[in-house]
Length: 431
Image (cartoon, rainbow, N blue to C red; front, side, top):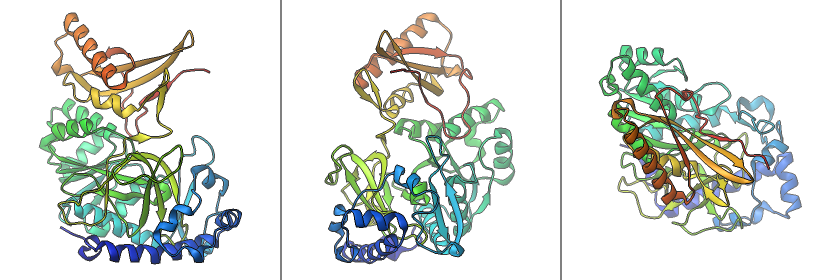
């Protein structure tokens, strides 16, 4: 199924010609803003000399710090009267990063989401329950408008209030949900606690996003709910959700190249890496009127999948996001990603749906503490069995991350449940 077959299966040469045309306009628009006008002058960039896509690598990179520096509207390329919406990050580590949209930007974003949903097999006959937060966060409204554009009946339930979510699913025959993976794991437990098997609710698809998670977590959710779970990728700086989406083949996320130019760079040297090598994803938005952003460092780690997708779409794919360069934990000099720990935990049947990684320092040495809830139906309560499970988890984690973790097994419900983005890592270390 295609939403716009011509653009989704466009030949590479035609796509690159379209990209260059859009890039030229985006650069001119960016140069009209106070921020990029100064950046281009400081770096002696003449946008009229950008005559090939390969020239993109010669342009300066943009960071989240730059967006905060340009706050509130130093990157805006249109008059204020043409702006119809703004979104913003939470700003937990400093000033919020604010993104602006014209009416055309909103309409085209919705169209892109509709394209993404159709790629997974969703149709106007589906009932779409949106369990992501609304408001300044882009996740809720992004999928909401896209699902309406597709023609689905949309239930804007937002996050939390699990019993109400279940009632809505039962009463209105929800067939597609948008949810964080951590909340999906928690909600499955709540459903079971109501005496209902999650598969009996009849949900066919789940769109997962907003936080990193492992393939093992996807597999666990699909088994618990009896549905197909699809990876999606987005970030507020690039509109929000819909930057990349899996198709029905579930073999990597198509990054929509008529909207975005993307590169993979070495996060330390900033040099471009060839297709297939893992590095930091850098994206240039070439389709937004209000606020073009050039070569944005996402801090997300992934790689390009070079092979063509069996679905017939020509837009290249990226692998699931492994983690972030700034989410990477350095434990005793070893680089560790939370997703690596999760991949081990979610493969073990005795492990429940909730866990927490705690970092401490004792006598100037780092300590990694993994707190894991047990899955009650898989555990009999025998101490020998508990010790064997702790040893097994410790050995499997040590083999993967080369750090010796301390494992703490907890009763189900011991850790705070997640209804939004999960807080998986607590770093108590003091330098």
